[in-house]
Image (cartoon, rainbow, N blue to C red):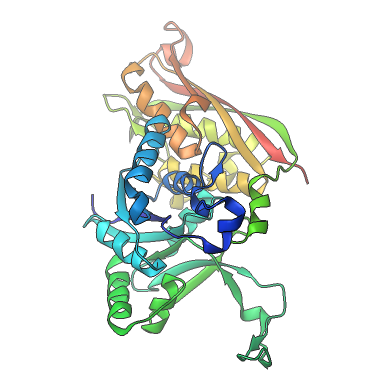
Length: 397
C-alpha cells in the first residue's frame, strides 16, 4: 500500500544518568504495568488509524533478546500492524538513521518517538501525523508552553540573554517527517560531523520549515532518577460506564463495515459516513462516560465533511475527547443484531480490530452477534443494529 505512515520507537539508549537508580538497567527497559517502557508508546502509536507499521530500534548487544520480547508481547496482545527491528548506534541520530533504512519503500511519513516516553496518547500521534502535509512543512513536532523564565548563559554561568518566554516551547516526541528528506538530513549530518539532540534540529540546519503544534504535558520522558516516581504514582480514579445504540437501514450504497472491518456480501447500508453501526454505538457509549453528547451532534449527517468518512477516524476524535476529560477505557462489551449476513466468520477480526482502535488488551473487548429470530426491524432484513456498553476509569477533578 502506498502513502503509508510508520512509527519508530527508539529504545537503544544507554541512559547513563539513570544507571545508579535502576540497578544498571537501561531506563527504556524498566518494567511498567507488565511490560517494558518501550512497549507502551508502541501500543499508543499502533492504535492510531494513520499508523501502518512500527520499527523498533534496540541496543546492538540486546537486539535479539528485545526482538523476541516484542514478538512475544505482540503474540499475547497484537498491535495489529507489521513490526520491523533495527540495531541501534552509538548516538541517537545513528539509531534514527538505521531505523530509516529499515522502513519499507511505501512509507511516505515517519514518526520518531523516544522509547522512554511511555505516557504517549494515541490522540497526539494522529494529530501529528495528520498535520504533516507535503508542500507546507518538512516536519511537525509537539511542544508545550514554557512557564519558567529562561536564561542563556556563557561558559562561566553569566547571563548573556533572556529569550521571550512566549515564543519558547519545550519539545517532545513523536516528531513527524518525510523519510526522503530526513534521510538526506542525516546523510548531511554524517558527512559534516553534526551532533544534534533531535531530528527537527537537522531539518532546521538545512533551512527546512518545521511546525510546532500543541503537545501533551503528560507525555513526559523518564530522564532523571526522580522521574521514576511517575511510574508508581497512582492518580485517584472513579469507575464510570457508557451505553450506546445505533441502527442503519439496508438498501443504501455503503459496503457493510463493522468495527472497521469490511464484512462484504450483498447487504449495503444507508449512511452519511461509512455506516459502521458498531463503531457508531461504541462512540456514543464512550461519550456517555463523560456526558460528551452524541455522534449526531459531533458529526452531523448534513455536514459534507463527514460524507463517507471512516468511522475509525471519528472514533479516534471521540477517544481524544475522552482523554481530555480524564477518561480511560478498561472494557467494551459489544453486540450486533442482524438476521443476515452471517457474522461469525468475521467475529474474531472485528474483535481484534476494535481492541486495537481502543488500545485495549484483547480480553478486555467482547463481541457478539445475534438475531431477533426473524422478528422486527432486523428480522425482516430491513437493517442492522448494534449496542455497546463500555466501562472506564475517570480522573477526579
